[in-house]
Every structure is written in structure tokens, then in C-alpha cells.
Amino acid sequence: YHVREFEQAVSEKFKVAHCQAVSSGTSATKVALKAVGVKPGDEVITQAFNFIATIEAILDCGATPIVANVDKSLNMDPLELKNLVTTKTSAIVPVHMLGVSAEMDPIMKFASESGIPVVEDNCESVGAKYGDKFLGTIGQAGVFSFDHGKIITAGEGGMVLTNDEKTFRYATEYHDHGHENNPDFPRGLDTCSIPGFNYRMTEMQGAVGKVQLSKLDKMLEANRERYVELVDSMGEEFDFRSIPEKSKTIHDCLIFFEQDEGQRKRYINLLGSEGFGTKNLPDAINWHCAAFWSHALHSDQVEHVQLTKNLLCTAIAIPIWKRKSVEDYKQLGRKLLDIRKS
Image (cartoon, rainbow, N blue to C red; front, side, top):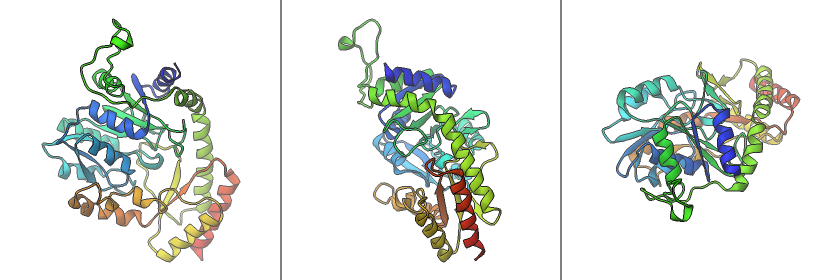
């Protein structure tokens, strides 16, 4: 089967014991949360710069999202965890946003000391590492997304990764209507012990995913070349996003901060006129910042993350497109620098 072969290829590529393909990154997050034991009435800590899908997955488990602000890396601020954890906390979900890892050492240390499982939402940083480990393989479970906006795509689809046999067993059963795939019975007479749902990946997605995975290293190198040229041509005049020391990024985009609103608009207008645009910041900030999600979060959570909103409103994310050449990014960097100096 294409899906089974895709799972095996991901397992080998990312050096993880188990992979379970599912229908989307969102469903991967929900399946992973259920698999690590999240139940109705629990609380799950995640971060304020995110895609709303993580919040939706938590809510769909019957749990309450508790939202941490981000630091200048634009990922979970580990210092917030001690003030957010309660006796109801059943998982911590750091989200590796736009190609860069969260600071996983302090997060994992806190989680281990507190006895709380970590589920890495790595939908936006497939191929990135923290130290010598691929993101998505550090916590008890991790999740990937393969939708059309990701580094590799199957059109849609997701993956749950884990080195824990019990977590994997629950994921395999839950994503497939509770099927245990008992070898003693044909599928029509298969046994079950939990109710599940249909989050299966299709064979078409699996077939495309295998081919896309074989292109990942070339995609990452193409990203790196463009990113490096852009940074070099922009020089040291800009206030760039912080990158954790152990983070090995996928160079998904280059993010910098600009406090002056007029200057910020000039940068954004240039990016539009040159055919680059922006990526989430600021063009889709409403869907990527918890301060806008009063329809899904308690009012105290929305209020708490105004700090993150204030930071994100000063940020500009330049997407790294393969359809743009290395020279295109070199010229873009020079034009941005000219605006900076004007």
C-alpha cells in the first residue's frame, strides 16, 4: 500500500520508531493528543502564535486550551509554563512556527519534572532539527502536515510520529474507527476496544507523499540558498527574529520586526510589487494569533496573549519561494536595505 510505504519512508527519514499517516495535520494533532491521554475536562498548554487548528484539535478532545505567549523566536516562551500549568494539565504542545524550533530543552525539562507529555506540532517545520534530533521526534508524539502550504505536500494529509509503542497503538486504532488490525481475524471481523473515527490518509495522498519526501533535501537546500542570499544582502540593519542556538531551520521564511508603521507599510508594499508577498505576518495574522480567537478561547486567555499580538503586529515574514531565483532574493534584499536607509 502507498500509505504504508509512505509511513515507512517517513520513519526511516526522520529516525523515529513509528509513523501513522492521517488525513491532515489537524487530525494528526487531535489523534496525537488523544493518544497521549488528553480527555474531556483536561487542559492543554500551547502557544499564541500558531494556526488555529491546534486550538481546534484541543477543543475537539473536550479539553481547554491554555495559551502561552511567545518570545522573540516567535515560539513558546518556556518561562510562561510554570504559571500556566495546573492539576488539570494533560499535555504541552509547542508549535515550531515557520521553519524554526521552539526552545525544546527547557520545555522538555519542565514537562519531565511535571510528568506532562509533550506533543510537538511540527506542521510548519518538517525537516528542521533541534540539536541532532528532527522536530516531531523529541516529545512523546509529534505531528506533520502535508497540505499545499508546507515544504512538501500531498495536497493534504498528516502524520503522527512517536517512539512510544502505547501512543502508536492508540493512534493506529483511533484514526481507523477503532480497528485493532488483529492478525487472527479478517478486517470484517476485526476486534476493537476503543471507539474511533475516520482520519485515514488516502492512497492518492500516500502515493504523492512518497515522491514529495524524496524531494525534501533538495527543497531544503534551495530554501537555504535563497535565505542566505537575502540575509546577506539585507545586512545588519534589520531586527531579525531570534533563532534558538540549537535550532537547525528549514529557512521557510525570513522574519524581521519594524516598529514604525509607515516604514513597515513601505516594506510590505515592496514585497507585493515584487511578487513575493508576505507569509502569515501580516497577511493572515487573524488566523495565526490567539488574541483574535475570542470565538474559541476564554476571555482571560485572549487578554493574556495581547503581548504576543503586540509583537506580531510589528513583524513581517518574507516567504522563501522556489519559483523565485537566488538572484531575485539578492535584489530584494538590496531594495529592502535601500528603504531602510531612506
